Every structure is written in structure tokens, then in C-alpha cells.
Image 1: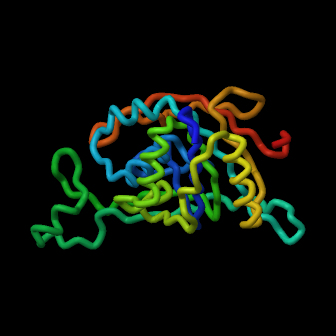
Image 2 (image 1 turned 60 degrees about the vertical axis):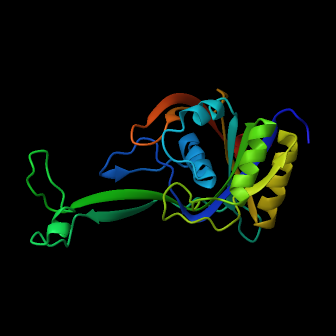
Image 3 (image 1 turned 135 degrees about the horizontal axis):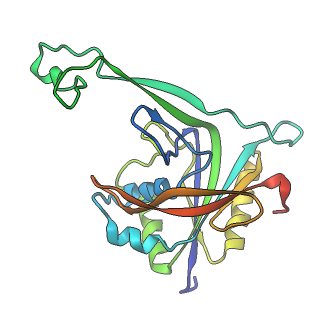
Length: 239
């Protein structure tokens, strides 16, 4: 392999994925594609890296990232319409015995210490989706991440811990973007999927979004900065 930059391919596929970028406690949303913060969190799980990770995140912040979404096809090879986001809800603080000293600690309380009734949180998920994520990294980073993804320290998941991958996430390191996307297309074809849309880190003739999803610090005091991306529908371009 070249000593210059390498291209790392991640394949993110599963029955549910959740890539929140602007969630509040009561409503946990999801974008229609993986966020940079979610991908960096996944890589940290593979590395077994907890805490702020400020130095590593600063190194990775300059790595270019592109996402391609692949839709299922019908018997005639035509793309099947995307499934709408699944909305689930969770009860927080219900069913606890206030007379039990340990269970009492799990009952939601206001700032003044008064007990509240159970809280309902709404959570959204992408259904039956598959994404190819390309990361342009240094040769040293590629070697380290290749080892981590093939021998992850912590469990890997697709945004939230209940989103289990159904395919190997690590799909190789390549010398060029062209070689990476060629491999991605072959994998999609084997799975009877076709390109649906792309998300690139540059302004182009498509839907331009500003996301606050570039992690500068993880841990208890998380910090993020903005980036601009463009969503390009496959039907509007030749890929």
C-alpha cells in the first residue's frame, strides 16, 4: 500500500439505525444518514477508547467522509421506496417502589427534589437501511483502525445500543476512492441494493445541510462544531 492517504470503507447495515444530531431528552431523532459523531463514536468503541479523546478527535476531524445510501430493489431491479422512520417510546421511571431505598433513586425528580410521574421519551429509527461510509485517513490511522474494527474492544452498534449490525462493518482499506466505491458497488449488487443518495462534505447542487456533528470532545462534557454537507439524490446524477 501507498504511504499516502488511505480510504477506509465501513458498511453499516441493520434492521434499525439511529443517527441523532439535535435530540432533546424527550425526543430522540435520527437523520436519514450516519453522522460524523456517530461514526467517530463507533470507531472509539472498536478501539476501546473512552473519555474525552480530544487529541484523537482533533486528528480525525480533518479526515474526509462520504456516505452513500443503498436502497433495496424489487424483482425488476427498481428501487423500493424507503421505509418511514420508526417511532418507538420508552417509559423512564415507571414501576419503581418508592418505599424501596434503591428503587426510589430511579424515580424522576425535579430540581427541588419532588418526585415526578414516569416520563415518556419518543425515539426514532431508520428501518432496513444500508450505508457505505468512506473515510480518507493517513496510512497510520488506517492500520490502527483496521486492527480495531476487526478485533473490537467494545460492542459495535449503529447509533444506539439496540441497533445491531447484520453485516461486518469493516470492509477494507483501499489506495483510492475509486477502488473503494467499486468494492462498495459490488457489495451492494450482491445484496440486491442500488444507490439511493450520497452525502458529501462540500457544497454542491443538492440539499445543503449544516450539522453540529463534528465531535471535538467526548465524555461527560461533549463538544461539537458545525460542518456543511450536501445530500445528492442518485436520480439527479450519474455515479
